[in-house]
Length: 433
Ligand code: NDP
Image 1 (cartoon, rainbow, N blue to C red):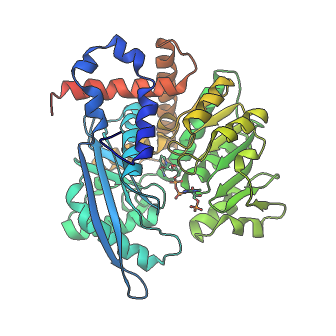
Image 2: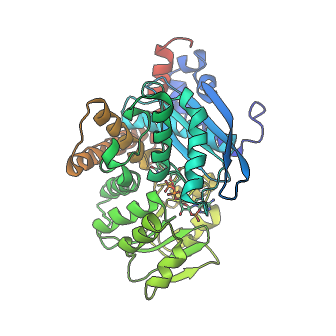
């Protein structure tokens, strides 16, 4: 704590993993001798830089850029970039820390990293976003590469931003290095299913959990927080599985649509028009925007937090349980506070932590890297099949590890231990580096 003052989200993420590790350290005392925990807590490299850019009025703006190259024992650093005014080092480090274990769980050869900026893309013109991305990449390019560090999107960074970033990288380096970024457009090196992968993967993971109790999404009343990339495709896949999705949200409130969310309309507003959820309500008869209270007040059997960290608190968990929730799967990173997780688990709710349940995005990014390396492009069906296999394997490994360590059904423990042991063994094998 003293070493990383004020980085509260980072402390929370580390504590959450360490809380699961007691039995592993007892079984493998050499992890302590080799100082694995200390090494895993310290990122390999942390880069902080100035991002100057000019807005549409001609005013010079200064933002702060970050890239935390966390751990590369398993492969090149891999993880998204977040553009949101709340971004500071503690957020980037928590996300990077989580990413290391998540990437290990995918079984793909990728290390963990994360980056971003306190730039707020909301209300900015295309030109402003482009100039910001170009300036950001003018520093970032010297730190990344196909074999070094491969960024992708996260909150505030979608296909448009990846395009501007890739364009500037290509221009500065004079290299068409497709494997340097993932989440690219389909005509310039992107992979089918990458856009859908995180949301689809979260639902696939939740579906695997439900199977262990002989249940499915079919007919289940479902709420999904957020209305961005992850939320949209979680809604889409849940509906494909027969769920009745009745609510989603953004930072202005939540939308209640008892008739079932029209995902086509949501995509049109969010992806094409870059609008807010209030526009959905204006065009969808029967839907209402609720600005008071919380989306977790809406009774549901399945809850999928897909917006941001610490959005589902203890009191929300109490309400969800009271209303009969059976499954909570995290599409976002660390959206559920530790006390809320405990409450849900104590109430026998199936709970999937983000580092397992939202790993489908980065796994499909690794599939994009594979396609780039072989100069190939796979079909949607093939890629989605690979995603489904990966999510089923992650589920199996988490469940089996939880069982092995005497906590059957505890996916938090299963994910933390399975991810940690893989990284720890690689860290030790590579020597004191
Ligand atoms: P988007 O930017 O596409 O969407 C984010 C959504 O969350 C928006 O609806 C946004 O609402 C809402 N939101 C963001 N911050 C806040 C906040 N502080 N308070 C309330 N609502 C907020 O991001 P993604 O869908 O890509 O990411 C969502 C989550 O999923 C994040 O935790 C991310 O780290 C995680 N994730 C994403 C992956 C990906 O592939 N994209 C992969 C793995 C995890 P508003 O517009 O009003 O801010």
